[in-house]
Structures are given as structure tokens and as C-alpha cells.
Length: 323
Image 1 (cartoon, rainbow, N blue to C red):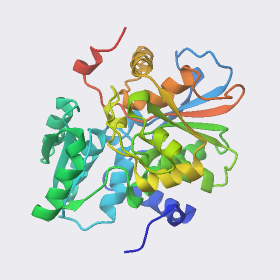
Image 2: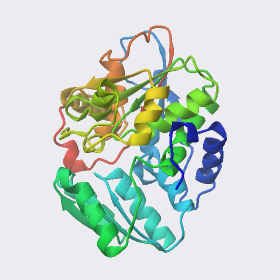
Image 3: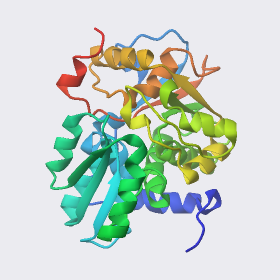
Image 4: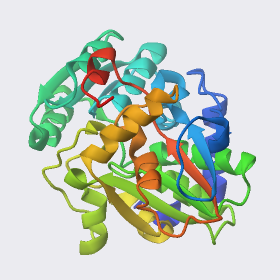
């Protein structure tokens, strides 16, 4: 099997993937990108911010983009296993049902139970395990049950699918100065960063945002290799057990810096967005939290894109956030 590296990712590959995603039977949509001034959101920096509303995407998050491309590259009716805290699992389950595939999602015990129920509703099996055991259970399914592992963030097809979001941003704003993206395992950040930089926007600064308690990519940048950690955060979708190898390589090449936000800042961001009529889950607010808490340097006077990556949050979960 050919070794996949950052060099494998070309603009041509990403544009082809975008066409696959656009024409996918899963109904991926081109989500709106609105100017901050079209909202009632507070802003203490003088800059031109655009918000990409991926919380309005099919299945409620950007994950469907990568899943649409992954499933398009594989045979129908397969038997797949993955690991996910929720959003990837939801998109995976949605695609499994559409393609007539059998599926299993291995979830961390810390993920909201409502996510498990939702995924099971699509006819996909769920097994909840402690976070450090996720890969062990996946490997058991592959070896003992002959399932095919679809990785939820460290996968070329997935990253190429996610890159469609970056290419969409450029269709509306061809020359952004700064793009701020949440980072968990790094699949979205890697795809968006590669799409933007390979499209000729070398001067665009791209920042990844992680929770302080789940800073695997931040730590990987320091140690110059993908690392794992016992990640804990209110943003469970940004708390994978380890950073992805391919995402790490791409982020090292195309991302300026990883900045960190606290769980308190994330919770406050959920509430602020909700008051402005935008339902965004904790993981989806990380980039926004970084912008409003001045974690991203030199935004004054700049054209900035902030991605709200997902809106899968239940009424029961919203009760736990400050007014």
C-alpha cells in the first residue's frame, strides 16, 4: 500500500473530492457564510469577521463532508467500524443507512447518551467504552469480526472531503487574512488549511483551536510528532485520545499555530451564540471562543473567517450552560 503523506494532498485531489461531496446522494449542502454585522453578537475587535454556519449542515456538523467522500470510495454494503464521540458517528450512521452498509460506532463513555441513542436510531450498533480503550475495541472488531475501519479523522479520503469546506469559504471570500478552525484529531483543520494554502492563499494565517484539557495537536506541535493524552473537555468532540498522523503533518505544513480555550470560555460561547439565535454545540464554538477571547493574534482590521463546526446539542445539555 502506498504511503500516504502530506505530499499526497494536492489541489487537484481536493477539487475532485469537492465534486464528489457536492454530488453525494447524502445531500451535503453549501452552508451559509454570514458577516458578523448581520448578527447581534458582541465584538470588541475592529475587524471584518465572517461566520461559516456549518452547524446548519446535513446531520448537524461538517463531518458529513468527509463521510460522503469516504463512502463514495468504498463498496456498497460493507461492514464498517469507527470510533466517535458523536458527530462523526451520526454522519457515519446516516451514510450506513443510505448505502445499506452494516456499521458499528465505538464511543467514549463520556459522550452524551443522547448521541448513542440517535446513532442507534439509524440501525447502527454502539459500544461505549473508556476513552483509552477505543482503539483496542476497534482492532478487536477488525480482527474478530472482519470489519473495515473507517477513521474519524486520520484518513486521506475524509480529509479531502472536509477540504470542501475550505474551498467553499474561498468562493465567498477569495482572500481571507485569517481563518480560525476548531481542532480535535485534526481532520477538519488539516483539510481546510490545505485547501486554502494550496489554492494560492499563502499569506492567509490559519489557526487551530483546542480545549485546554484536550490539547493533543498543541502538544504534538511542541513534541514535533503526533501524541496522545487523556483528553477531557466539555467539548467531547474535540477530545480524541490522540492526534492523527496525516492531520498532524498537514497542520505542521499549513497551520500557523494552535491556540487554546478553557471549558469556561467554550460554555460562555455556547450561551452567547444561543442568545443570538445560533444553536452551536460546545465543540462547534471553539473557534468563536478563541476570537471573542482575543486568543488569535493580530485580527485588527483583518478579514477573518470563523467556522462554527456543529450544532448537535440537545435541550437537556443546553440546561447546563450559563445564561
